[in-house]
Image (cartoon, rainbow, N blue to C red):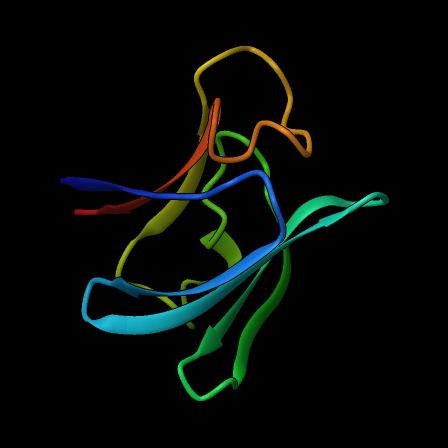
Length: 99
């Protein structure tokens, strides 16, 4: 099993990242009504998954394994606090996990 942290900051952000053998674009946005959400796009800006809510302890890709099957995206917290605008990338971290 391989576990890699995806570095984040507690701000809206977009970046390109290679997960396993595929390059993706991630867009993370704080929405007052929904919390942090993730959009995943191809490198040529084609939306693959839109609006994944960031939930601590869950495989964020569980219902999207038919689209991205190389691994899991899991959000974990160093503390028992909930995710909020200021904890993303500090006490709440995103990991790419492959078998």
